[in-house]
Amino acid sequence: LVVAVMFFALWFLVMGLGIIATGIPPTPEEFLRMFFFVVLSIVYVGFWLNLSILFSVRFRQAATSALSSIAVWLFFSVFFPLIIDLIAKALAPKEATQEAVLGYVSFIQNLMRLSPAQLFNEATMTLLTPSIRSLGILTLEQRVLALPTPLPLGQSLLLVWPQITGLVAATLICFAISYVMFMRQEIRSRSTAPKT
Image 1 (cartoon, rainbow, N blue to C red):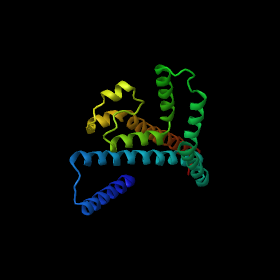
Image 2: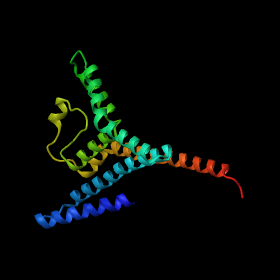
Image 3: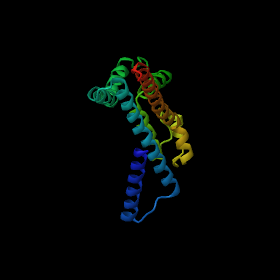
């Protein structure tokens, strides 16, 4: 709740300053796109917060849990893309047929989507840029048939629905695991406490 209040306060402040500076209010669709971006940002920050809570419950020492959280964040932000790049170079298709290239790109994109940062980047890019019509590779036929008009908000949300679902699921899984671990530790500590 604190993170949500902070993000919404910052959003309204920035939007108000933007309206004062430019004198142009956002359209209802732009307002809704920004709203969903803020909600997505809250979920993304909530994932890292729940992961740090999970490490805090697991390790009990503040330094160990903080270093573990930072290590996981660094891995997914810096080292994971490098590892995927090495895998991509090693598995590059020898023959350049359309099926081989599409399968290869799809496999690499799915590997990248194991990272919460990649899910967040794809979702925000699609929500804030209505001209993005696909998150995968486009064939020549799809590019020719693509209309130059921007996608409506509903279509953008449908396009990023798997990324949003993945982030929400990861957030809830981290919270559920930390809750179960905490409750087990609490039950054990009460059952071993001396009775007065």
